[in-house]
Image 1 (cartoon, one colour):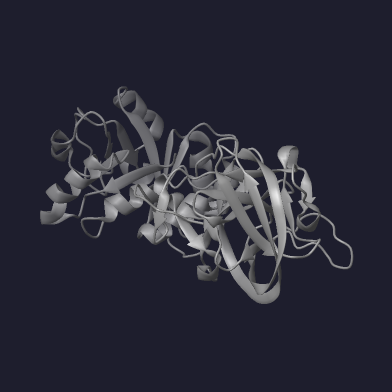
Image 2: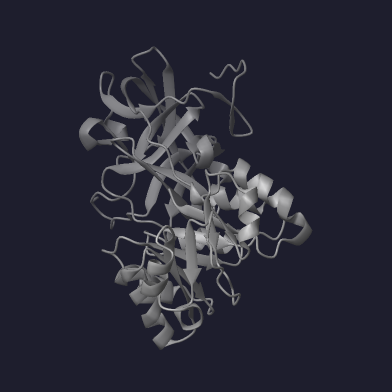
Length: 367
């Protein structure tokens, strides 16, 4: 989980409401420039003092982390000796090659490196993250807003260890915390036994082209009903007559469900450039990927019926062609037109019915 630090130094009359929200959302740290403010905070939050040009107080009682600019506040080593009970961090503002090198040094050597990048490009942050790959300290990068925070958390796939953000209004702390904990769940896949395949004629199917290379044991879950889906493999495996397209899943008929963020389902017909879908491998490990394009075309369709060990019936309608595939146990790749009763495919059984894509506990009959 990534760190989120909330900067309340300039929140003015909104400070009390913002702090209440921040503590409710369990933000990791609160940044102040006045030690007196720390008395408002419980011991569950990291108390960060970032003086911003103010003289350092003689006593840092209640401060967990002191972030300083050595050129202004003094040598980090001397400050560590002066305040032995406080962790010392280094603030660096990156504006050119020299300050970028200072940032890399701080990230490699300091317990905390708090970085402010003045240029909009994220290349300097990539360089710092790479330079500090084996360091034991933490990089906390200042973000202007939640949208930038989301980018910072994902830079170089590793991302900054944390983000420091000044909230513009009540609600921003909640959004920042959501960005910091944006992880995807591990799913309990089940083995489904095929009971029947049926050629059902023409219809529209969707190819989901993502902005990501899939692995060979990875695809997306697709099903006609919200309570059962089958793992459709990406086009990472060689095919005759055509090149591989490892970013693509020939996913199924347009009415089908697939999983996206926060356990929500989407119809394949709803997906578009910028949508998110859940990539899933044969072990049930997941990651969120971005859709680059959805291709909907009329093709012959095949219906695959299967049953789970608990008796749940699952249906998937795919393009009726040999090169459209699903995944079986151990990552076996199964051509959809060659499936026969008794064959085993991998799937997932969501526990709740759906209303506008969200899980809901209500009566719902799908057939």
